[in-house]
Length: 286
Image 1 (cartoon, rainbow, N blue to C red):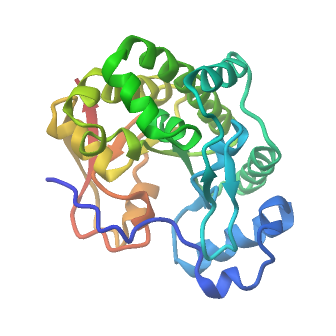
Image 2 (image 1 turned 180 degrees about the horizontal axis):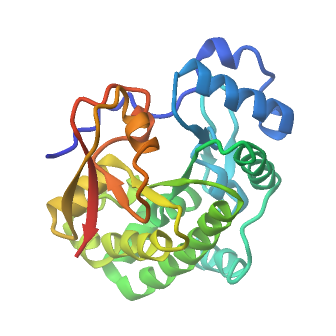
């Protein structure tokens, strides 16, 4: 069983919904965020609330320069916040042993708390270390360091991993049920075999291992491409979990009733799509 990314599974706010809100102000309004999250779940006929409607939350908090967009176009990096590795490392070091915070992070945590009061199931997307770094500084600078001085690159990666882990744990603490974890910029197809085997695969694994047993009610859902590479290049084994005849992938996940699992080989944004198989795919790290 492999995974092929169709390229059209990324999170999008439908135009008809986006037009009902004033962006980017909506991203900073608790009532708007609640209304939008409910509308999206209903519109998509989904089993889960999916947050935070973007892939830039951590990057913004770390000083990234972001264009928030108009709802139809998603938030994205505008330019690199740091010109040198020294600047980047100095900034990341400020967050050592400090919980990642921003106005938008606080709003989304409040939203998770509110939604979880009614036992709603919540998926929250968290970005990986390479993806965060390559949104803060020109990727060529970091990839060059990864080739020439992998030990120093690993030091920077571990600073980011520490931030990611504490951030994800804080989300679990307020009621998130599934952490959706991806690190697109660290894929072997992007960084090449040498950097993948030396750095990025191990960075992914370190984060996953820290989160998977954080509490007894959490699962980690990996990006389909990321999980496929971890299996393909023998960092993990595939275990098929047989499930009942559910109509959608989301219903199957919702009724899994087993926890502390690393799930993959499918995109989390397809939870409203037909199941098309009797298995959920678990990864067991080697």
